[in-house]
Image (cartoon, rainbow, N blue to C red; front, side, top):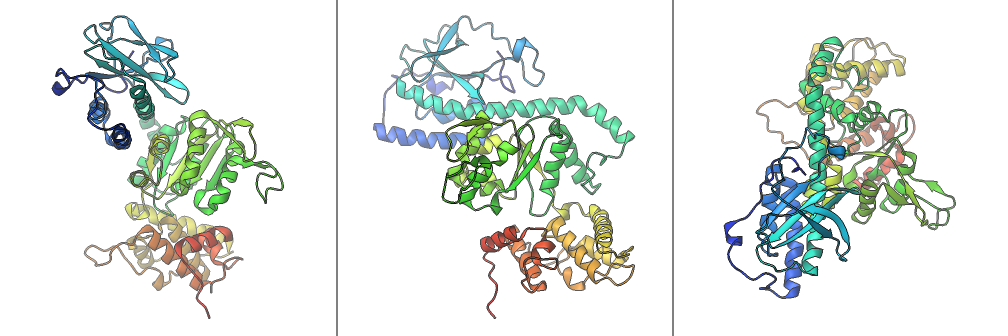
Length: 511
């Protein structure tokens, strides 16, 4: 057996080696239960921020106040058929003779695990199981013969579930890093041979920030790992998700997308998993859910932070077990959909505030990608302007062919709180009002240049989004739909725009 990512060293703090009775309690049973709940929450935070070298030490430190033990270790199984695992460390455990039978909470045998050395009198090993696979064991030992009681074993089962997720994610990270290292020489050759953006025809730009992102996309696209895309509103997170799908082996299968913030909470479960006829009042026919549609393909869930807490366990089950039921049905369905999610929120902060489940966050955050805001890739703005000018000129049957240096300098220096989406809308309006071959950029559109030393303070994303929607509504005289409506200018459907207005507290002023 091998350790996860590093050579895990057995942790035996000096103060644990003192002669002390095991199983004793300094608190009431209720107090111990509350303290263990606190330990589980603290452990989830510690593991989320700990480096792989600190896993064993941090787990031991977290458990010590509520559980008596003298030795703690983590054992990880080798790859199938004994093949070398190049992204894991190696260590000879032959000095650990014999084995120890591992039992479940009900006392039934589960597996055979290695044993601690002979001076450890009592040992308990808990399997680390993730997505139905046994990764290894969490092992605890005592220097005396006091057995671990049923209450302690139940508590350790909860601990092992958290540890298993971290181990699984860590192995996935290491595997991707290993593949990246192996592919590095080929990547250098391909960069010399073909343009760097040949695989990303929909993504415009050549900045170093964008190139770095696209290299990560190429690395993870060929795997089935879950990807979480972070980025501000309007940065193009959906384009990155599409690129991940198009570069994967699933590219011939469906790419199904859903904006979680655009669907009312009461209908979101039905959208994701489907429903049977009569499942609820308005269910007049059977509906196929997005996970069922995306079988063998990719499902992209945008604004994943908006999923309500009560629905998160069902999403976690799909990720872990690859199964679900439609609303109103007891029949279990299987899905082989790869999940890609995106958010403009701080999900780790949501976990701290208990607005988002920590176990679901670990599942989603296997391979995070950060899409840079437009202000961090200003050298891409002229290329984007050129692209949008050509696109809208062709659409509107106009012949706008040039942009003055003064106008381009203003576009490049603007802070773009709405990112690429805002730039696209500005260029669309500019093409509409342009009467000749030169692009006429309205002076009032660019009021906040990001000049050094200015006194302007950036808005929050929500404030910027609200201001941008309000400005568009005023320009369209509060017309939502139609060819001249705000929804089309914002790149949204009427239903989505109405939902965003309600969420942001935007109300049409009374006349």
